[in-house]
Length: 109
Image 1 (spheres, helix red, strand yellow):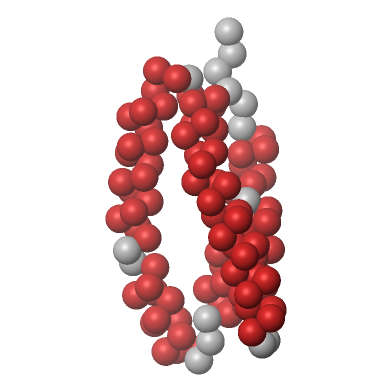
Image 2: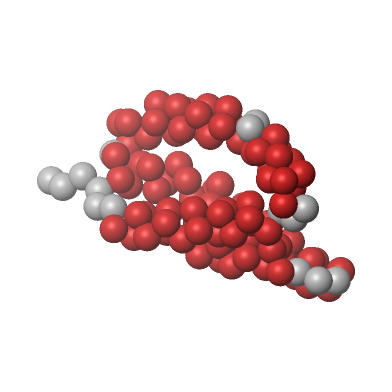
């Protein structure tokens, strides 16, 4: 999540093709890693008995909310002339998520 936050900040400040490609590779690696580990993290935090239903619910909610992302990003771009605010917000959300996952503790016992 920290690498994904760095990648989002990189998108906000990338100038030129080389910087964009490096940032895109970092983002792709971090996104793929998070996607692969997501179910395991949920299972560790909530137990394997709950993992299937929770992951299904979370992906359904995330997918539905993600559908609004392009609309909101477009509105921000139309208002500000830049996607920078959106990329910085996404970076901050990933930092917050990394902190929360770091603080989370799984079931005891």
